[in-house]
Length: 250
Image (tube, rainbow, N blue to C red; front, side):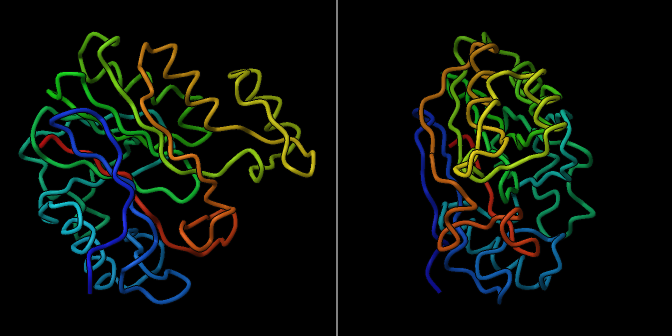
């Protein structure tokens, strides 16, 4: 088995960052094949094997990667060397109740996604990094600003890359959800390709990062719902796997 397929992104010298695709893992349908989520009904052995393949492809040790117990909120965990490997082989051991992790250590940080926006952050001098899971609820709760605050750096020196996520083309929502979300974050306002009310998560993320003084250096602008050959999508498939955004200090 070759290394897991991934999309490497540039967060500056001294920082590694990548988004995993769904390819080159060992899971069977509907989790085929590089499912990294331990909480979605897939075989634990398959997921652990996939996490080892993913880490190997990125040049990391799987037993050092820290994983979060995500809840679609704005909680942030400050990861130290003592947290290395948290959640690597058991969802029960993941850092509880957080949708952002920051560290100044060399512990790699991983955030699971299957439509929500994975955002990876780094200080310009590579002295700290963060991984964020920014769905609609987390975005509106202020998870990106919270992560930027937790890096404890001059925000003008913070860089970000935005990963693959469901596009406005496919993220249809009800009128009430649309109205409430747009009232809180006008940049979210959008319509699907069929003209129905939708949310533009990428625009919302960019607006939140801009207000936080964070510079977006790159975006992987692929819609997860439109790309079944490359990405998992909960909105499209329901029962499915999870990919991840991973960031680490080299």
